[in-house]
Image (cartoon, rainbow, N blue to C red; front, side, top):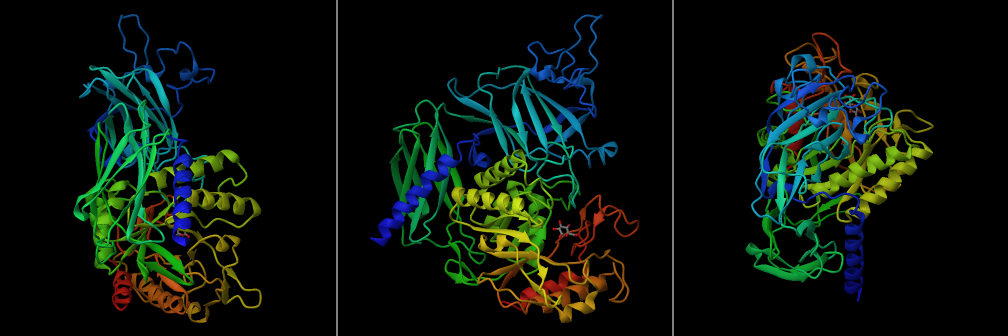
Length: 610
Ligand code: GCB
């Protein structure tokens, strides 16, 4: 009976999930679909005054019935010698897509504003009745997309994918895709004006055309049942004129599993498959299974692992066993190009360092990173914390800001819900407690749980001093009640006092939950040596790690950590010449890939836990 009830509950949750995601039309598993890459050199025009977007009365061209030929998205060409057109994409410089503009062109290093991109292409569909979508892995921050002079839509948010259908606009020859990307920071944005990372602009991830049948698999979510780890459960959603009453076959050949389901009136179907032979995914056994979804028109393949993740009192349980998360934080910066990362090679390098350090866990801070790294974490057996860019001081009372944050959260969960390595969705980082903020975050948590009831929820919170003794730290943030894992950042010996204070600090954590220290650390310029009380030396940072690890080990609920940070990263808040030179120096590895002394301290700590 209990089992049946859970089954019913699970079904309810599943259908709730799908209806919760009808707001956007993202395609699941864009990574493995039949597609044509539009990566490469695109022409670009730098437009700080948004001259190609607004007329001289500051009215947007794309909202006018007959837009002027000076509207850049029309890509108008001079035809007669007397024509006045003040731009020409094809005579303009080119830039690599994907890629941030700041590190590709010296004059764009500090640029924040609009850049227009244009790429022309021919395209012949493999079947006349097929549909085509243009898919962007990400562009920072606000993107307006036009094909052949028609607006496809707008996307807001710098780190999540979006796609638009182009079936009716596409022609076989001479298509032109024009993309306006604006990375100006705004007060109401997510993130807002103030961050501690470089505001890399541009089309920073892959662009491609995805071709699907007229009715196609738009979404699926496949995972281990929360209650019964011998059961693989899932849901699938078809979209198109013939989405209802269609059969979908789901197969996991290696487990000899196959089930055939029929979609309901809204194109959805749920399924269950039982197996006694599942080899559960874990850092020691990063086993992925080929999963196939087949309709009469389409076949999609994915690689999915099966594991359970839960908490029990102050433990984190992976496949029912307590685990300690030996981690590190990471920004999405390439150790190879030193701009925004977006390649498998970038991901291999940084995740390789984490393995070398004895780690099993990464905090992808402070926004969703590219899909390569999450898929590689699946393969390499590295557990992942993914984070929504709600950072510091968002406009908590602004409903538009909330919708934006909720939308980015939804897109992150949508893209990665089938990635086994992802165990924690983080709602926010270091946000100051207030009634409005509490409501904002509570609503995000509710949303995340409805979209994905299978993973843990957290947020990097802040700590406070206890009333009687400033050396006793507590977590009195009301969000502590709502999260599954209690995480907080602390900077003893760097922003708070010097290193001698670590001996006196204690935490009095009253919540019966596992604790992850989401950040601690301090800066060191690689190659700078001195005594351990001299800031910026490798010795100071080394000592800071020794003292902090000893101090934090006394927290009895400590179940993991992601010190700040694996690699030095660019930040305009860090101008100190000769030391910082635009880099936050809290990395254990310099931007050139050289390890600092503290790397070995953390490695020794993690190795000692084997
Ligand atoms: C923090 C932030 C992180 C900063 C770091 C620092 O608490 O969460 O984004 O980069 O401190 O280095 O100050």
